Length: 417
Image 1 (cartoon, rainbow, N blue to C red):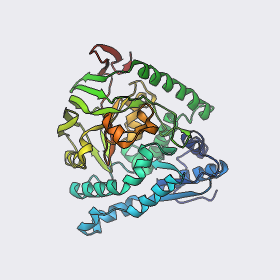
Image 2: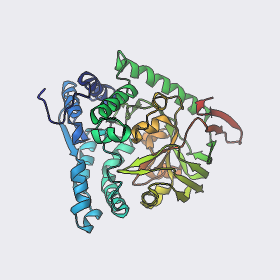
Image 3: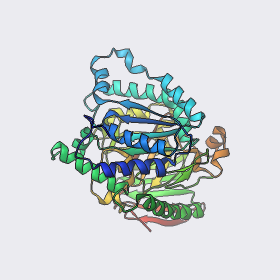
Image 4: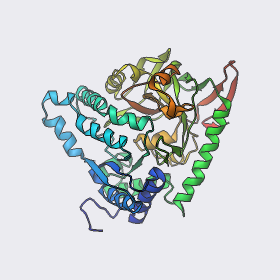
């Protein structure tokens, strides 16, 4: 492979290629003649190249990649006229939605600098995020409704690595973040593909247990938290590999340690505090505290990023309601690593979490056959956003609440009961 300016000796190329192979064969299970759309930070070019090669080896029809770049993103905030922040590339997302409707798969590589927009005007950040959310809706619906096989993995962008390991030299920080990504993604095992098969089987056991119980609600209790999350009528728990509506079984997230389902949008009561920071669109939001009444957030605070949080909550009516609840043991490998990634893909898999906004239609019994109206009638939420944030720790207990009000221990001190 031709050496590139973006390549670095700090990242083991053998392990990086294994990550690419896992992304194609486990994450996507890309099919012969299936097109693939990739989005990635430009720093992730070495991983994109490996993924593209493995995609074509798997028989991909056409691989198309769209790149983002921190400097050009910041140029908008420094130079663009005010009206720019109410615009988004709707034509691009309409094209993506058309591609997904035609059978294309979707792969996103995360790794942007989590603090990229921390110094920018929160009002402009919120406006740009809202415009993008509105424009993205046609494509997002194909993903959130699980119409297609899709996948997210990560690359150790130097700007991200410096945030995670601020006391290290850049190459050392990149090396440390790369190894943390490889470990969490099971790349360091002798046979990563077999390791994922075993892990998916274990997650299936957890989701099967919860589906057998048919709890009406979950009750979370811990420091700053006394929250009852009603579960949607006909909800179904999932975890690990799942079959998309196009018939392909994929692992949407690598890494993943969660089992998750759909809350009832109108049946969440109480208060809850975050246990890890939320990195959202280049802004860090920390120490979130919210209060729910009848499923809706009626009060929200944060020690950092509060203005951005409240702008997010005002995106639309569904932004103040929940679209997902997920259970993760505190002893998960990502939690045990002790690394705070400032990246939701990783940090959500260190902790139980909830998500504001859009629900997943697949998290219903016979979800593939339900109309949007039926999903809403069963308690599913609809929104332009889907934002996960962490509420679990080794100090949080969770009970399953049956329809008659009796409680069953599900987690104690962050571990499966």
